[in-house]
Image 1 (cartoon, rainbow, N blue to C red):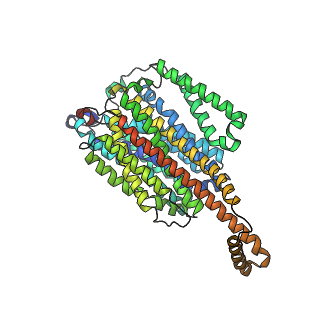
Image 2 (cartoon, rainbow, N blue to C red):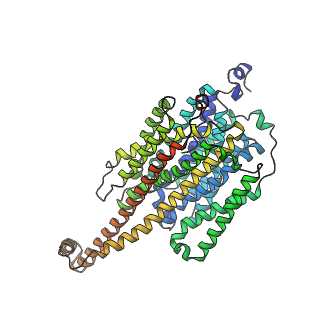
Image 3 (spheres, rainbow, N blue to C red):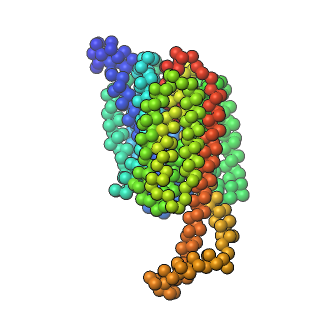
Length: 529
């Protein structure tokens, strides 16, 4: 038990140094955020190992994000019902156990089920950590704790691809999940030792679990994800099951909104959306989730699938985002109290959009350093979005609504990310088919340049494979180039659309209203990653 002197020095944390509490809650949060991106560079290996296509392998990412989003609104109820500390330890334990089953999965179905369980365990980790950190520091010291916590949040999704690539190439893609096991065990020990529930949670009285609202939430999010992931394979509304799934999604979504608005004792109280700044932030945080997870998921795939990079090399190429994030977070912490936060958010979104346009300049001849500047700048400018947006969203939210607000904002971010990944994957498949048709239509067999190219390739192959293989081999190589060009153009389209969305968000930042300075200085940790 903490001594009386320790209690007097650190009254908010019951005698525990608040920086120990910060480290304890950062560890599981960092692990959870890391897991949303660490598998991105391993997707081709997962697909090959489990006999799945690349589009099916992306379900490993989207199933996690959707499950994660579903549990977020319920995290506040569970924290009050069972105790925040006990619930946090339970979530870490479930996440760690599910990580083992992800790594040991023998089939796509098993890994998807394990990822759903993993997402359920990880969903509550960030809002719980935010609430604990918010109450562990006095108001005048929250800016420092927010900067430290925000750095971990920004670094995790950019370290993930590099670490995942190294583990995949050095051992197996399965170790991208096994690495969570020792981290999870350490997090459980630290939370058990240093985190305590405040008296108002120990004495809290909560109502019955809103099973109806939770069920409708699972139905509409589940239907949304299934339609986005599988719809393009069955020609969207040309398939009867897609029509029924969309109908079920719409009915469940309307019912969930009505339930969450009329039932003030439910899992989620949507009346928090009456707050202008929070409502604005929710729209932008969902759009940011779309932009962020598109770049996190498809850029490593481009380097691997089109350019033939290994998982580690692809991870190293996108790794410099972490360097940019480090300096960006440090600089925004200095500027946040000196510059209009709407200007910082605008700068961040515009910078992200410019980087996305630079990604859209790719071709088949780029090297590992061609996109070094935009990749690094992406991490840098994200810091200008996360922290200022968290300040403007949360400072006018009453303390008793903080858990409700963080649950909703994190849910929207994850749904935005899942929708973004699914839309990008669908667009790449569809646009690649379109470009393949268009390019093929312009390949005239009577074209002298095409004939000359085919003859040169045929002569080269004939000397090495024999005359019988020369012509078929030349045609095969030309067709392979056609496919590569078509897929490359589809990636360019996705990056340009992402840039357009980022530019729209830059304008949306000016819908925020500036809060009083005293409230701005008491801002909670960032609400997104």
